[in-house]
Image (cartoon, rainbow, N blue to C red; front, side, top):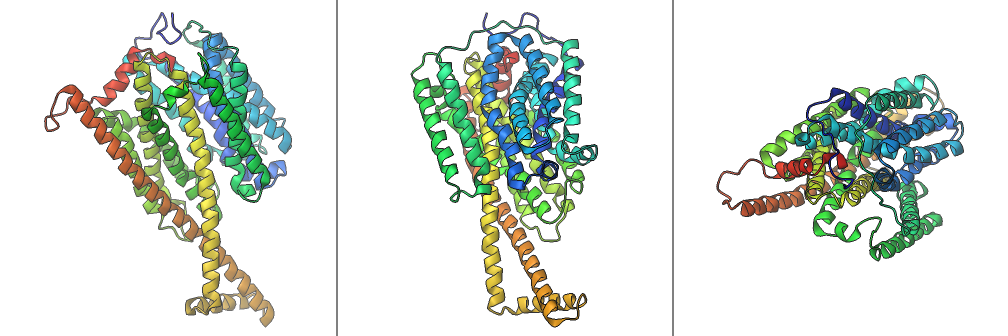
Length: 552
């Protein structure tokens, strides 16, 4: 019996307990990542680290999480589901407890790297419980529900963090992790997953393939995440890491292409369909950095903290859930490919709205635009899942491990690439705007001269000394120039994101239209005749249900 085939006893009705456990596991995994990555500013003080040093906490997590998802999937097939479930949660709980003992940057980095490895299994378990909570015919809905709770901690972490930080230093963030891990352990013992047969998936060749794959991704993660902080051309060690990443990944490809049972099915992953799938996920994750890097970065530059942005991200959380909830409805009426088109179009609208920010902008001005951005994330994530997993399950699930690795890798690398590119772009544009405004001041721009006089007059209220007044006025003016150049740089970023999202919308529209024409041709109907009930969602959903949703 294949490990991807249905288990002997299949859930035929809705199981609230399994759905609740799936939601709990998804939140546990998500908070483990986002509570730190979204609160580095508050954490660095507790560890006595600079902003650049604290950024290594995120790098350490991603460096292990990138390759762990593939390894964990294969371990689950090798050792069996029940052993895998219990061992995964005990490992996560142990690492979460270790966070309470970390009191310096070195120990914190080691713990974060361990958590990246320990948290990887929880996403698989969350999906398993959701799929067992619903009948097989509702597998697509269960899949979307599971990923909803995996994504929800992103915005929720900014809502909860201010209160958690009050309870302690950075360890206060992980009191929630420990509590959720304990609840999860109790829950999986009370309601265990149905057993599945084991399947030998490891071979001797993996002793070479796995290290090459892991080291290559770790080095690539370091380059992408640290490039802007160390600056790309100023740190020779970045070039050494990039060369090492290319060498390791290149050797891995050479090894796996000549194996009968490769770690990943590289030939299948390089098919045009899969290349388009990975490119779409990667590009959309880059575009979504408009929120985490763009809006959050702008608000931070203007003195706003997570406490002032709590309502904003509460609304973002609602928008994310709404996007996942609307996805099946829209897919049923219009077809799954059009979900991604709608998502990209919403990003265009949101980015254009954000591009009109000013130095007086506050989180309230971004409620609508970021709500739309969150809906877009839910819609696109749903489209990716339905379009990616459906065909794989229709083939019997033999490429499932490769798809999971490609999907999770594109998600994580897209986030890293997006953050690196957006941060670099803002830094370059800010420097350009500072020079432009300074040159205007030096050439006697009357508007700037009037501003200088106004600022100097305001500074005159603080001191009567003309020299001191001039110095204070100049310092205040330079602060204003820096602030204005920062706002202009972020507006440039929002405009660039809008252009990129518009190009994506056009590309995805072409792909959706081609898919529609192909579906019409295959069904033997003319384009002008009424479309039969949505061909795309049933194709994804039916195939997923018929080929054991529990194998995801």
